[in-house]
Image (cartoon, rainbow over all chains, first blue to last red; front, side, top):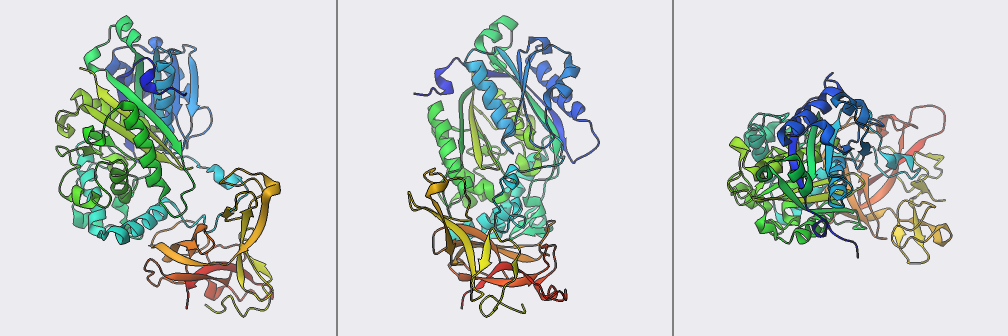
Length: 382
Length: 155
């Protein structure tokens, strides 16, 4: 039988760092990457020379991203690998590093997530198999179709869908690393430029660049390097799945249901025990569908729960406390790594004005084109 | 729309021949497939394998599908940078009567409640799908017209 992360040696997040997410600019790729990684090393209290493996989650920047950035931390000759999994690239890099440390092949792994908005090629266009309306159904339209179906199914209003953006923009305004740092009223969200269906511009994540980094260590490395164990957060589950033949059922929601179920079962906890959740809210409708798919509330209840504040900071489970993709931004490969930095900050109690009280357990979730889904569960250790 | 599917005697060229075509009467069909091994009906046709059971090419057969089905979601697109059509336009998620699910471009922006029946029609467009609307695309003067599959509410 295949083993889960929980059956291998414990793996911990010891350090986190970010380069603020921002609109595409002339900032060097190297500046993005080294800023995040130096902050993560400083946060962990280790040197780059202590790191024995590096994994970079990246999707849109180009081939062979790692060394052209990481060489400027000092050349050490360690193993370096890029991991591409569309929007879930950073999450899959986290998963690969976690497995490598848990298996005993690495003691200290560095995970970088980084992307600039360069030329994007989706391999599905290289299959020679055309798809009807392919160029016309961009992600905003894909999710506007899901919104249409969801509203019909549960009698939910466009205002209720938009209330997700109000919450996440409010959280993003409190996050110094967020691209959109302005609280927005429901009226502002609804009155913004219409993109597709009920989705307005402020209900769609921005195009971003940025970087995030985490240092992942074994228990041995904590002792050997004299790290502060109370600030280490344990990764207790890692799950990854791909799309099944769902036909008219939303595969994004199905993937989320199955993957988060795997992750929670590995961690041995129930959805109600989650204090913080960072999920793939590239479009408002996604958050409604995913909190239901994760079991944070019942089917069709998300809109009412969000309006009642259940998923606010200070509510039952803080969802997208970072501002999520909607407000913090979505620098493709960085995003999944950035979620781990937010959850770690929350579980350490270091999230300042975004702090969810008594946060002990968190779940990070990304879906990516393909479609794929990755989820991790993190738990405070002290 | 100047001309619609049935009644066109000769369809010389369709914009996406791997996806759809016109039969002898000018009626549109979807270029689908069936797996002889498990019976799975898929769209579009491809020669690589069955997505359900994994059977290889020799078990796959082409199958013309009727472009008729029910809408289960729709959206009117207001901003769009891609080729082929100028916003606003409406995309419908359609469950075909034969099983597969697809996203089709509607001929107009009439509201589409879920459960609405739709059917495919071939409409003349610019031959490279570069954003010329059907109503203006037929004056090329070459005598050759390119047709694109769109959907309309069934009668």
